[in-house]
Length: 118
Length: 114
Image (cartoon, rainbow over all chains, first blue to last red; front, side):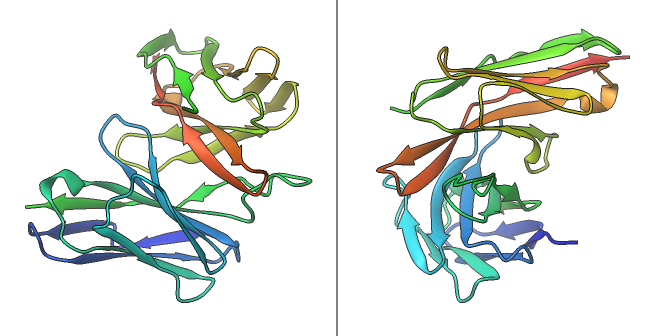
């Protein structure tokens, strides 16, 4: 089955120790997104890739970086995690960003990575 | 500020009843509307998408869209305890005609009592 996969599902890191979260997709979608979701809050978009074109949200801290080496994979790097970065990190994909002629902008989410910062 | 508003609940309904979840949005040019279900500790799961005014039915779920009133709702018929979750309304906001960003509401927590 086509799907969005995230690894690891649970990540524990120490304050200030860099961490990388991974997302892969078999949907062959053009767009990949990274969201941060804290308890009882809405998912917050950090950035997204449209093919190789990187789009950063204005309020995403510099501490968060992303890489997309190919269509299937996208990584979230947190350079110096703080206690406030503990959250669920969600990867999502969509065929396109606009609903041109159909539901091409529908986003499908992976299972998420729960990050704990000690 | 583009916003999506939902009643946070909790909304409690008895098993077998109809659950009605509501959402309003601020941007008149929005074209795409989604309902996601999120169980505690899990990721959002797509339930319905709707693009045109009116009703769209899929099994026990019906999405209703009224663009003039900037209102979208989700009805769940014959509610089951397994429907107990947080339901997120999401609206795709378009910027300059070339890019869309999904804006989520904070979600309505639904509890279906056996």
